[in-house]
Image (cartoon, rainbow over all chains, first blue to last red; front, side, top):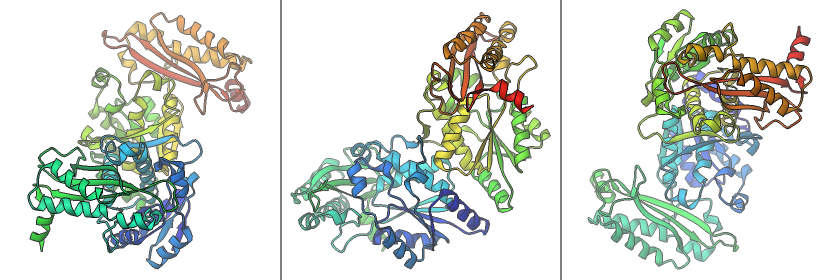
Length: 302
Length: 302
């Protein structure tokens, strides 16, 4: 497995693969790899060879310097696990490689980035789209793989890649969960035991809403009241947002749900060592196009 | 010569050339090609094979709908002349190809884009950098060639390409001029005969400043007073800006010039048929790094 630290070296590697007629996949990560990331890597492997993984804690997508500083960095472990997983090359550049001295160029997606995490974390998506554009320029992938846990990020990256004309397929992979349903996240390890116990409230709220939609509930506010009731059962949880939105445009869902709808949650829990709160996100598409409840559609597929 | 209308087809053409080990040059234009453009194309030909020319009147870099509407469009003539000039492929996409329905992604360079044309034409450079990024993604060139007449544009495009990591050499080509010194521009044809006569005031102002610098003048305001005096000799001229700036950072030059310095001019003249005024720009680097007057340096080179 090659470890690459410069954009030019990665481009050279990508050019060799392309000249040989190979299909390149990129899995962008911030490191601290967990089973969720390795699901992305497996998905990438199914679709391409070589598989590149980028490991870069991107400073411009953090709102708080403390969050950036505290973000776990375990490069040697990550590299060992990538090697075991059969990754072909890891791109682990220093910050100055992706943000050279005097860099003032930003890639920005308007509209889609305004609600939800965009509202809670001003500038966050600008950092994401800027770094992902740089990674696509550097890795020249045919396929780039992202987790569906970051639902809005996936929509924003898809839009950016399409708008700029990148010849890349953006693939979303279903969220990987702990046995009790908590979505895997590098942030989970900052939860104290009590918060960790209550953090399943997110997935339980998603389950409840999905179930209600499957039973025919189409009233947005009743669905959200149910979601808030479940979250209220976790007294440590502080809701950042709990919203029903159009699953494609991310516009607010109408009072009577009438199209593909996603329930998006962001909730803060106290951190293990009394640091900044831990912000967890999760989401589920509870109605698919044609206003069919996802749970119903799933039954039909069986 | 191939005429290509889609990003995917251009990418496929670029991939074939790259796989064959060829070096690709791109010359981005808005069409209405004149001798200045063909100088860019010759420069491209010296450095690469194949040479791609893009012809796209980019709506997002115009401030006025009327300016966009009036911009000359002579695609058939342009194609014939590109064919004669030995261009390998012309990329002439419809607007919806580079700005698909619902496109909301912008590439923006901060800082460099604020003064000069950025101040006079809000949003102009955002349109330029966005479309040039799309063209670089589409054409995958090793070299992209721009005219030095658009001095600020060249600096902004260089910065954007570097910041996003495009593996492309941005080449600037000296301005091509009419026999009387007027810089070639597609806009010149909109000048009435009297305005056309007076339009040489720009180049005469550049000459005067270059000469004064060569004679040792380092006082910014005296140099600019000289420039304004020359421009005042053209009563139809309305100055948009006439500024001395650091030739690299585009920051305002200090009162005593002490580094590489560019004189940048933008002047409006009445249009031939009484339409919107015609805005002409021109520039010259009058001091090179080390505060050597350009005219002196030129003598030494002989």
